[in-house]
Structure formats: C-alpha cells, structure tokens
Picture 1 (cartoon, rainbow, N blue to C red):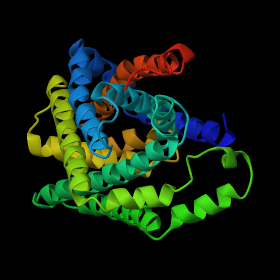
Picture 2: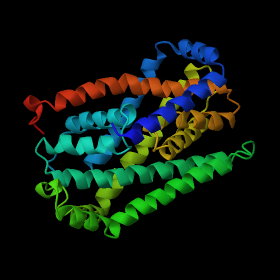
Picture 3: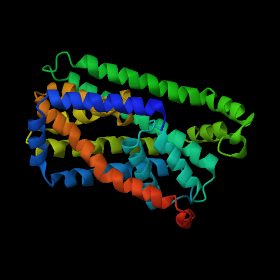
Picture 4: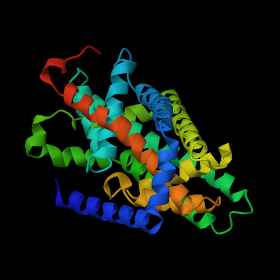
Amino acid sequence: MKRSAIFGAAIGLALAFTLLVRNDLEEIGRTLLGVGWGILLIAALHLPQTLFAVLGWQALNDKPGPTLWLLYRIRWVRDSVNTLLPVAKLGGDFVRVRLLSRRGVAAGVAASGTIVDISLEVTTQIAFTLGAVLLLLANSHAQGAWQLALGASAGGAIAVAALIGAQRLGALKLVERLAMRGGAWRRLDILTGLHARVEALYQQPKRILRSAAFHFTAWFIGTFETYAAMLLLGLHANLREAIIIEALGHAVRAAGFAIPGAMGVQEGGYLVICAMFGIAPPQALALALIHRIRELILGVPGLLLWHRMERPSVSVAAL
C-alpha cells in the first residue's frame, strides 16, 4: 500500500471521527438503530442503479460480446474495490479491464471501452448535478447554497472537459509512444492502438448516446435510495430534496477523490447539503453513514467475488 494512500486514509478517518464526535455520536447511533433491517432495503435499491450503469457499459461493446451477467459481476467488483480499498478512484477500473481481458476480450478493447465508459459516466453525473442545481436555485429558501452547488458543478465540468479533451487531442497517443519505448509495458497489447480504438467509439454517436442515456438513468435511480433512507430516518422527504442531496452528495464525493472512499469529505458534504433543508447534523450524518453501511453490505461480497473471479479455474469463464 502506498504511503500516500495510507496518509489519505488517515486524514479521512480523522475527519470523519471528528465530525461524528462533535455532532452527538450517541444520537447518531440511536438514529441508525432506528433504521433496523431497513438498511437491507437500501442495499437492494442500489442494485437497479448498478444494472443501468452496466447497460451503459454494455452499449459500448461490439456484438456478440460479454454477457450482461458477466459485466454485472465485474462492475460489482469494480465498485467494491473503489469504495472499500485504499486505492485511487480508478483502481477498480484497472481491475475490470483485467477481469474482462482474462475472459477472452482483447486487453486493448477492454481498456478503450472502459475509458469511454468512465468519460460518459462522469459526464452524465455532471449533467445530473446541474439539473439538481437548477432545482436548488428554484427554491428561494436556499439562500447561500448556490455557491456550493455551482462550485461543485463547475469543478466537475472542468474535469469532464479536461478528460474528454485530452482523449480527443491525442493524449493517449502520447501515452502509447512513451510506454512502447521500453519497460514491461512493451510486452502488453493494452496500449497499442488505444487512441484509435477510443476515437472509433466516439465516432459512433448512436452507441455513445445510448450509453449516456443508461448512465444518466442510473444516476437518477440512485435518488430512490436516498429518498428511502430519508423516510427510514423519519425525515420529511420529497423527491426534489432527494435529487438534490443525491446529486450534490456525489459531486462532493468526487471532489474528495484524493482520500480513499472520500472518507470524511462525504460526511462533511452531507452536513452542509442537508442543512439547506433544515435537517439536523445527527440525521444528516446518519444519512451519510447509511450509504457507508450499504457500501459494506454490497462491497464485502464484491471483494470475495473478485477473489473467486481471479482463480485460474474460473478465469476462462464463458462470455
């Protein structure tokens, strides 16, 4: 484990612990206990969101390609790695390229599809966040909140422009040249022709729009997870507030990418976002922790699945 990951995790844990202790830890615990077995409902509501994200990824694959079930399992592993392990935000995506290539898909094809899929996922997240900003600004009682919302959206928009712009302007060509000059990468075909494959995908607008539509739907479906969590916490909830909290919560989490799992950053963001709707700090932190618990419920089996899928005996599973 790199020192930077350890340092980031330590900062995140310290920040999260400070927020919990300073906002009535006992009350937060009682609030979470009141949810009870309802947390399993929250976990179940996340499954359709994952399905639509997988459909967005599948739309970028040639036919016949990997089965939906295989892609779903790989996506489950990817999310588990990104949420539970102290790796960079893209760590799980390296894993999904590896798992897909071990099942007969050319490494370069798997990598190009993953790169475009990440780009579309981030782009649709920003679009979803901008929609939430409009809903927020339409409320005259949310004075002062628009700075946070627009700041998060502007930062995300810049990141998207940089990500896609770099791909279209030839950054991947530069990576190919540097990697092929020497070293272990020369023995891999993952980088050879990567720029051309990514460009070929972007030149298929129907496939890109189909993938983007699935990803945007996935972000919206996540709203129902937040809405159900608010109801289980006994909060006055409506769909508009759930959309705003869900969208801005993801924006804040993305901003905290340097800290594994955005630990502490996400919880702090929920305090600020929920305060706009008069939600007390203990309830806001309980809402954030419900998402953390859901990540554990789905993430631990996902890591076990990763271990199983890496076994040689199943490395050539049928597509």
